[in-house]
Amino acid sequence: MSTITDIRTVGITTADQDKAITFYRDTLGFEVRLDVDGPTRWVEVAPAGADVSVALVAGDREAGTVTETGIRFNVPDAAAERESLSSRGVSVGELLRWPGVPPMFTFDDPDGNRFVILEQTAAAAS
Image 1 (tube, rainbow, N blue to C red):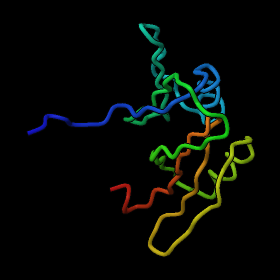
Image 2 (tube, helix red, strand yellow):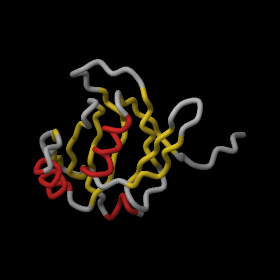
Image 3 (cartoon, helix red, strand yellow):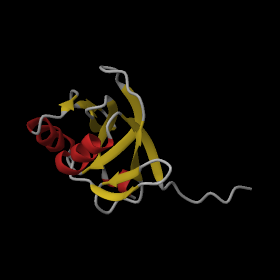
């Protein structure tokens, strides 16, 4: 039987941690929760109040390559968030709407990490 109880952090690869911090902090409004030097630099960012953080892990990235992270972020209004991110120069996908599925869209960070923004519905919040 496992004693795992939660997810603390998910990691993504970034070519330049300082540039990534600038994007996540200044463009997305995330908090920098951890930025420490050790054998390697460890950086964690997250939306204010979120339980799970995103680790910005230094590594090689092939320019122009998009990587689907599998990470989904909740927002109260997907259309408004898409417009807001687009107005700040973020690469966003089309707003998708299907019957019975919350509105959603993708966005890419400057390293080509792809995320999904998902409108949080009352059923998903409970």
